[in-house]
Length: 400
Picture (cartoon, rainbow, N blue to C red):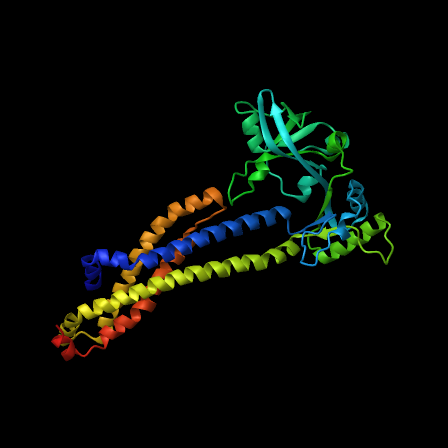
């Protein structure tokens, strides 16, 4: 109680002392908000790729400093026939789909929206990737084989083109071609919790895409989902063998296709992510060090000002550990005041960060911030508290 009363009696000085702590806590929470947002967004994107999905494509995802683009540009394009071959011959794959993408505008009557993604896929796409549909359904094998003009649209497209009506069964134009809406994807939202682009995406049958816009000069991706308990390397070996036969490659010839998967991309991103963590921790540690030195400085001043009080307390029987605990608590309380102010300012800062970057400020980050405050109070308040605790009572009483 003596420690708390001392802080209250010098509230302005205590608040000014904690400016370094406040800046440090804001730095910690701000850095954590950005890093956690990037981490959640990265994991969300990785989850959408699938840990058990192999992507057969023309270009590799991982490109090192020695990457030579001319070795890849002359590769033949990936074709839907490669997907058919995997379906017929593979024993390790659960489902295979061919995917091709383009973009353009969508319209219904007087309403229109730009920047719409158009994905052509086979009816097996939901067996390869998780697909959430809120209304209607995905197109069937009959739709896919018949190249029917049907489409599943994203939630954002449905909201903008059909604001006051059910879009199921309604016509829609994609890049000037007429389709019929048969399904609406579940809304994913924006920010780090979901990929907002999914809300502006449409899916149509692969053969329908071929019929309207062709795939000869487009990058087609064949995506294969593994059977459960099949290792990635075994599946890749089987896929490579099948596709080399399809491409009629000699034993001495190199692959003219690439087998991409999530782990390789994660391995490339991991050093970048670690560098962001190290830089962030370094900057926040520097700010907290400055704040801790400020707390230590003011506590030495406080001990000096109250030397006579320390002498009186010792004269009436106060032990060293009691004096030590008193000033240690005072340092912790000062840091906690700074922590409260810092966290209070961090909440609106996190909201501002979310407007321009993926951000996430969780309860765990706030708890860590307060733990840091207590730690700084103990570490930087220990030396002044020990100075007070070991002060000789007689010399302390003589102090003016």
